[in-house]
Length: 362
Image (cartoon, one colour):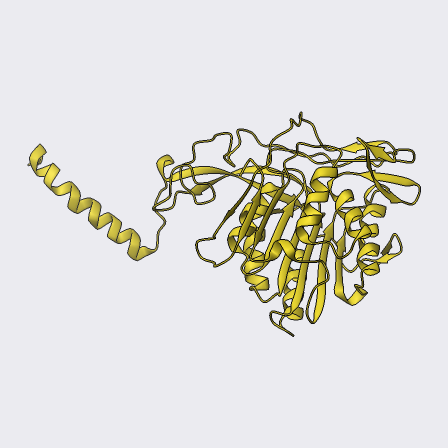
């Protein structure tokens, strides 16, 4: 005879059935299905390496922490990439001690660079002279300031790049910990090390990045202290300078590992500098919502209500490769309005340090 349980008996049995099912899944190591309420969408910056891969801001921040381990005297990270502001935010969460992270743009703006034989000034600011050309842009002004005064502090370099960039309003991001804002490119107590990673292969980019290498050497760096990954030019010379590696994701990891080996020779007494000039953009990613996440706080997997000062954006943006022409080479495809810059000081919750933040979008 067919037996049909009563509704009341069914209600009493369901909790036990659910508990048994969950217990079985745990013992079997099976993943739980994730509902829409358990996920959120975050927007992250990334750089594009020449092997067709992406390195996201949070991924890069973890690499800095895992590979360098805070063994530096101070760390200085400089990134010129469209929509690259996420790298400053994420790296500031993982770097310890004295550090600075400076990006050419926030997550909402593309980069722009111009050059020309007669383009000496834009808006009254003189560009960086390389051969017969004058270069203008955020990194061009950063290099120019360092070339004029290689004793400049991290904050002075960041300020010059921001205020003399011909394309104002890109909202560069600058974060420091400890005495990072006062650090200098060559202030290691024992020795100094710089990692450079860059796209290239054009008559526009190659002279520009090789000029950076020349400027570092003029400040006292040697070939042994410079590890340069550029385009697919490993073992070649670009602009008369030796290229050590191809610009690939795998090589970025290896470069940081080799940098750590150099730091370990004199822990806390070696300068670590990382400079990246790369194509980049942003991408939305779904992530699991973490327990205890605060509404409106980005980067933690919590539900975020997008607003003017949030890092969640409503669209994915992409930056085309720059042209190699003589006049303007620009990646900007959207209007760049002037935006205010604010400075604030705070104490990182897990570090006894002074923290400086620039940028109204943070």
